[in-house]
Image (cartoon, rainbow, N blue to C red; front, side):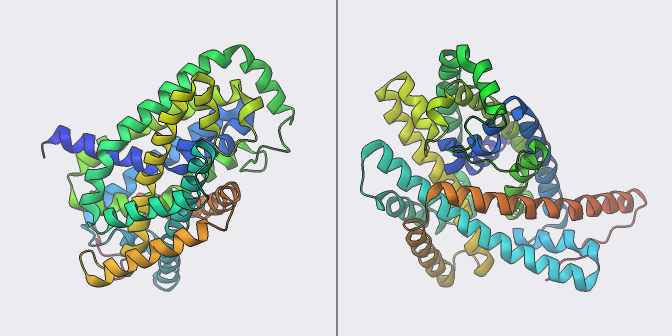
Length: 379
């Protein structure tokens, strides 16, 4: 794979990973960003800054230390707390991130259920089962197979999201300013769930924080197995597309807030503003977005418990997929996003403090020619 192809593949994979059920349905955009009305840009900028710093750090340290497993990155960062506390903290983050990724996979199954039921009237459960089968089959092929699959789908998803958002931003522009005022006044507070308790900085920290534990193992292992320059450029490009799209989505959602505030799948409401045909096409795109996030999420959880290619790895993949699918059929989708993403966002942001301390210490050590590459890694 040449350099340009590698960069584009990594960019596409990062976009695909980030744009899962929450983003593709725009439910998380409503809860984290649009619900803040005139302050939504603050949330986007905070989240973007966290995304860029943490992912560069993951890839850089994964590459520098040549980690065998992406989850070992927690031991690297938590080593700043000292041997005993660091080991306990690393173990907590390693296991919690695997658990959270598994529960996020459950969220994706819930999104698939809601999408197929809302758009096509499919019996509840069909979406989760279909998604689980596709994800399990992909995860069985391991990390490189996942990157290959995701890299081709991501750009298509972001293009469709931008198309629908741009068109509905134009059609709703006349209502945009008035709707911003309504949101700021709390008009939709009873139907529109919000992360951050009214604080856009807290919402941005939570939004940037929840993907920290999504991307930690994924980017660290990609960094270890690929050219660092390719990984970082690909990730930077993904950030531009992702957060630009988030801003446009907010404008579109706010312009049509009367219809989108209480919707389970706000993106479909916007698509239907254009035409029923576009709504059908966008429902397919949402399903693709759900698949592209669900796949690496399940991989991250399973990878903690088994090595790729082993019988144990394949068995756990099938079992975890079945259990996650079952949970999604009994827990409401909107509540899953609000509680799970919010909690993980704050815990993920705690990790940032250890990351900053480690990166500063490493920079100083490298500057003085002293580097301890194994510090904090529990091998």
